[in-house]
Length: 507
Image (cartoon, one colour):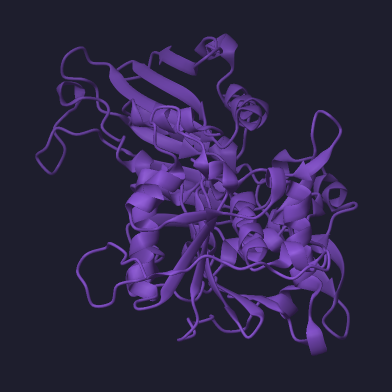
């Protein structure tokens, strides 16, 4: 496995020998998290009980990364350094990537299969659902959705019982099976920010939601020390950094590694990547540089205002369907809640939106506006997203924008953000909309396409930010920004109050 030193007593060493059903390690760049996770795979492969049938130790693992380029450039490279191909056999690359390790080991030869999976498109999620593993390892977990992590737990049923020995509980099971993960500090809207780093949860969550964000007592959490120590002036301002002598893996790094990492980096980047702190790292040019978090985000969660209709703005992307809920009150726009789905068709997302309205806006008049492309028929069904929402009692009106022009949409939001009479924000977003806020701060940013044109990056932030665009366009900001008066709107529907059914009553 090559020469690699792990100092005793470190978080790396503790993570390596742990046997919890879920173990995660977080720390700065260069701290050997991924290498140690690879070693952990080998440890479990060697410690698996020999099969009662042929005496071999059978295990199967998945190494997961959020995108194929990063899987090949980072995860797979670290794996090859840990398990050189001249000693352990070649890694198979192609439509699927895997490594089959077969070597002698005292008490029973090792037979360990490792699949390398990227999760950058919908079909890759299906790959995870079509096989069985002893363990699933997430490289850079902060880039992975919670539902996907939860799905991996249902895949842990290898090897089959006929190859398992009897455990102390009297059952024929693998000696260990579980989930492993590593990563740098997550963004503040990620589920790990609250679960692992103790960040306050967003407002407006139910007790059931809050319970899901508690760290389970049977999970293992390993937090590495920061790579640097801050040098402060008399006022407590950071003026410099020195290398933390307690930082892990220093003996395996070049002597100037962290000094070089500091060059030209923002404070947020240093906090996130080197100090192991939750921080928002903005990459690229924000679509709305005029967005001011202290000004445009309310200090307290926004609540529904009786007597005013509710507007639900929808984006129908299959991977990240999105919905925003808000109201216009006395000319001001209040965005109160968000829902961001993952890998859900409209047939699954519509009932979620319907339930949310019933629980949070009982008795309110509600209207729906959405992505004009939502009228397109699906590839495997004759129903459009609009048809499906209408079948659930939620008729959707397309946002008033010609050709769904992205420039018009983003400029409408910019107009609303800049329209602040008497110094009062015309548009205000609730802190409960944490992913939308992170998107507005800068995660929703411009990237250059192959044509050379700068366009907003498409991801989960763009779907919620698209919903915000439909929200302000529906309220007439597309017309206001060119000096026209907003046109009339269709009548809202009424959300049933005190009824068991989830259906809407047409007003």
